[in-house]
Each structure stands twice: as structure tokens, then as C-alpha cells.
Length: 351
Image 1: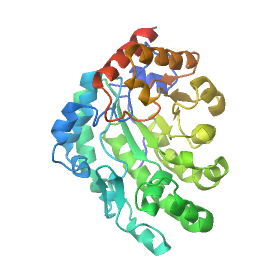
Image 2: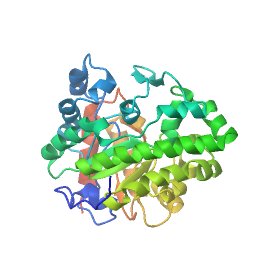
Image 3: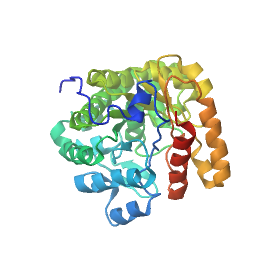
Image 4: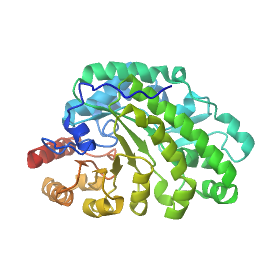
């Protein structure tokens, strides 16, 4: 698949894409990681009885779920409803998403022979993604659609551990003890991830986000040596399309500069580092995304507004700012709190 620059879409002049390009905006744009999901009663209704991975493979259902928070909250961008393990499932990796647990891999990758599980991904493997994005872009009109994928390290952590982990001892043991196997694993995952993002962009996604959710478990020296090359390969593969590329990880305050160096146009920041300090760490030439603590939404409206003002004040003078939470929306969040937050940010940042 080649990477021709995509022609301007109906969403090109949206506040979200302008902020990503570090251009003047009419107001600070807002979207939320995990805005489509368990916090919404309408989501729980349409997902009832349908396993997670199956729901990601039904284009009409994906379209409905992706649109739900746009209708309800008036956010400035939609994010494609999927899961980071979808491309792995599509190439035949034996895995499932278990409720209350997360992705579980039947045969973890521990040896070079295990790499055989990871064949190349083709657009035909995820034709349902192309179909769903076609449906979505027609419905969304001028509202941008963000495509996304899991970064090579986060995917590798699931594949090597066999499921979620707090310590990543097997993944780190491979990284430290068999660096050649580790590099080959991440390189193969980078190729799969790049194809998955290309499919989304070619189908109509206006921006893409690479989630390196668990990169905060790494020291900067290890990230630079063992992780950055694979993430950079993903970003380089989609550079020619001309769409903004966002990079986000949790607990990555010490890695912000490196995550920008990997090739992101926008660096996502969790709630642990104020945005003005994050800008200093990242350096010039990048927009920032973030970074209200998701748990603030369980406090009073007055408290939410006060903490939101802190974020907006910290973002004052940034080259570009996309308002978001510092991680995903928590399942028990009151949807009305999100709707009020979007309105508050829009109202208080109107230029």
C-alpha cells in the first residue's frame, strides 16, 4: 500500500485538525479517549449479548457506537470504535477479550518459533474496517474521525505476557535477555500496525492515534534503544498521507520528548504532568493533547470546572492544544458530566 497524501476532507478546517496542525482555532477542541463505550447507556444497550471482538467486526454496529458520543456530547472528533488487538485477531492470533480481564492470548510468544503466529496483515483481513469508516465519514460530515492502533510495545506486552500485566516481567526479560528476538517481534508488529493505520486512513480517517498504553513501565534509555525504532517505523509509514499523528501513553512523563521524537505531530499527556511542563519536555514543533484526570469527573461540577480551568491555564500559549482526559473515560462516569465538560471548554475558550 502506498502512502499518497490524502486530499482535504470535509473535516479539514475543523477545530480539532487545526489544533493538531498548530493553527489558530475558534475554540479549544475536545474529545475523550474511550468516549464510545461503557459510560453510555445507549452503548450498553446495543452491545448487549455481543462479545467485544465481534462488535468490532460489525460495520453498522461500529458506526452506531462511534457516533453515540458525538451526538450526545458534541465532541469535536469521533474516534473509531475498535480495540488494539483487532489486527492481531485478524491475522489469526488465538486471543479473546475476557470481561473484567482484558485481552488474553492462548499461546504467548516466548521463542523465535512463536513469531510464526504473526503473518502479514492485508487490507482484506480487515475489510469490515474499510466498510465501517466509509459509513462513518458519510454520517460525520465535517466532524473528523480519528483512527487508532496499539503501539508495538503495548501489543508485544500482551503477546509475550499472555494477557494484562502489572510488571511485564516476561516482556522485559525478552527485551533485556534476547534483544534480537525482541527487535524482530517489535518490527513485525510495527509492520502489522502500519498496515492497520493505512487501511483506516485510506478509508477516510482524518487523524490517527498510536496508543502505547503501557510504555510508562520503561526507563527512557530502554525506550530509546528497544521501543522507539518500532514506533518510529509506524509513524514513518503513514507520514506521506499528511494526516496528524498522535502518540499517547500512560505514566510517560519521563518519555514525552522521546515519544515526540518517534514521529508524532501531537503528543498526548496524562494527568501527572502539567501541560506547560510537558511542552518544555517535548520541545517546539508539536501540539499537545490532554490532560484532565478522569477521576475528577466524579467530583462536583464546580470541582470539575476548577480543575478544567487549571488545565486550560496550563495550556495557555501552547502551539496547539486538544483538550482530553489524561486517560480513558472510566465506565462508571456520569455521561452528563462529560457533556457539561465539553460545553464548558467550548464556552471558556471561544476566541
